[in-house]
Length: 257
Image 1: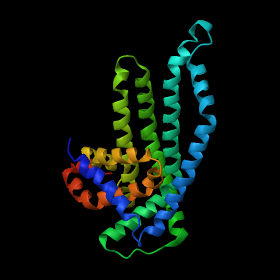
Image 2: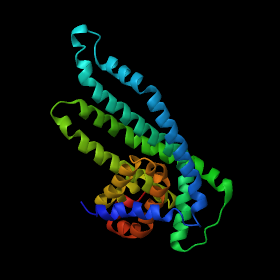
Image 3: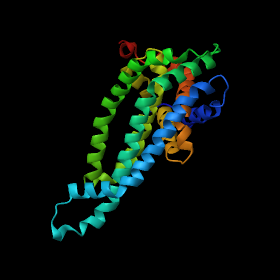
Image 4: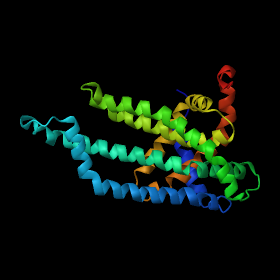
């Protein structure tokens, strides 16, 4: 596999460093506020319903037979983990769908800033114009994401092979984070979803390094509040600096729509 995971993680760190830039700071605000509001809502829902959701899962998977009730103590940690996973990924999906047009707009402004163009505020009309395309692109990601998520969940319940499931979850999460955020600058530059995946695969280790650090950042309190705009900025830096090389390395037959 080609690429460098340290270089990939470096793009996110550079995205964090660029957030205070006066020319893009106004465009960071909406994704940042969206992330904060939805994160607070997710935490509130988790704490309010955690016990009930765990019991619901246990009652779903465990027959109501008295002689099996001792298994409840064994199942509880696993079901608790599943609840956290569902809330974590559900929050990520919902937050990205809501913020998609603003993230696309932010990526466009960052790219202009990096290429030396004047960054101007085009107002709400420019954001509204992005909404249909941005939502459609998020649905494409969801269609790619959900079947693989279900396969991973099944693997997590299969004896013997489920011992590798934690590693698979980490790699899958890193890959999906790379797809999620690298898609914004590529969509702005009219790269199809199929070709976007091919480009990331051609530099897979860099992509995994980038997405992996995003995943870690989302688990750190306070840092997770700014990780969305930082990831958008970092992905745009990645695109501007690496896309020409990646495109040249790809076979032209894969780049044709």
